[in-house]
Length: 158
Image (cartoon, rainbow, N blue to C red; front, side, top):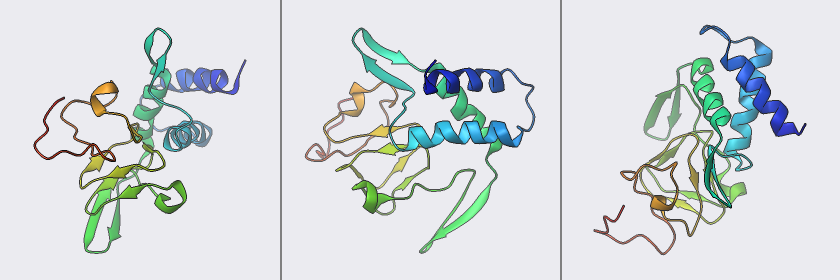
């Protein structure tokens, strides 16, 4: 059994528990999945040889993450954010840009060389250069993400 198989099994067991607070061990397991989604090692959906494969257990971990998040205020310059999740960190180390007043939650992946234009990137999203949002089923059509050399004003295709 691989590490991901074990993690998947643990998330399924936590998911089956009653809908109230999670114990500290369960919180660590959920956080472990979010860490992997955040750094791009794990995705809710991935392209396989036979098309897109949905990792339902990852989506369940994200839903569990909402249960454990506590609403907190964060001040960044003149902006105040009040949310359950911290803002994404590590732009310089990760070699990506977030253009003000853009915001990205911890739990989304922004690949090296990517730029998030003013907007919002929710957890579980995966932004990489050279990919059109319409090519990825995890990105709803109404989300407009500017990619390097692909940002065309007035372009409303998907």
